[in-house]
Image (tube, rainbow, N blue to C red; front, top):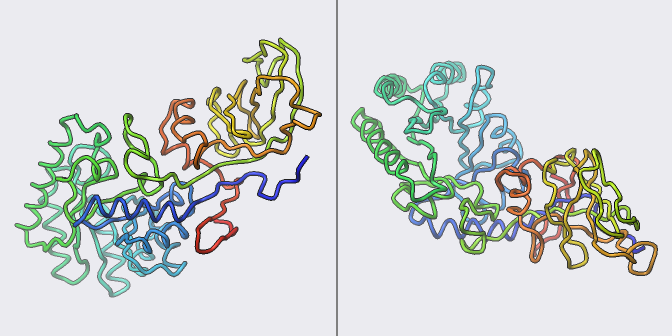
Length: 388
């Protein structure tokens, strides 16, 4: 067989595609600015290289969930504004303030952030979050005026600087639903209350990727885009190309075993699949230990220009495809050692194909690819094989 010249298991990250996507979203959102969301290691793509590429392409802000994620970006030398908005009682707010992160506040966090600012003798930069209907974090509307009052007091003391008001949409990926209208109205009212309380709001932000495309009335000053910068569509009836986006991650490996089997051959645990005729099976050395969903039987794998279905149960380290013909093992036509692409890139299966097989969403498929899969970064200007 031909010896492979690429990693055994690899997620190739096309940074040129990512830059294209950021520019596309920037054009759609104009004149609002773009926050590139790089939480969860940039949805599995690698936070530091993705953040740098997004900023190069015109993103003005970066968004993360946890303070620790923002601190890691700072330590990598990234100086752009970074907002972190999901905190616990164990969050290191002192590190967040010290590193100049923007901190989201839903209510209880305010006193902790003020304490850190007092200790460091520098004001914390904060964004106040209103719950407009999603029901997760964010200040409940009936407590909003009280939060504003406390924030104004601390701002007058020089302990915080309120620069933003934000919220998050629940059903923007379903544009026909009326709840988004209600959330927009609630958000406008919350911003108005903040301005009446004496807060000079610099950035109002509400739109996620679907609202950036479908609801220009949600753009305000800044849009927070995650899924879109990775080239994936948030809509059930529109693909990446329909939105002018290019998928960024290509996940591939090699066929590690290839053998002829008779009709009736059981495949993998439980014999949930048996061959209907004599055929060739290919072993693909990735499984749920690599982040491949265990239930994604039937998902497509591209080998030598053809799609083949995953058959039998997916195991921790491996899955099986049925090549549907004989004569593909122990001959010059053997597929042993050939590249096997699970998703991404031109002509390959789409992330959405795997999401459908796994009964989940495209967000989860890319984000869950584990650290056991090497990340390799590709761009036209400079080829790099550095790990994430």
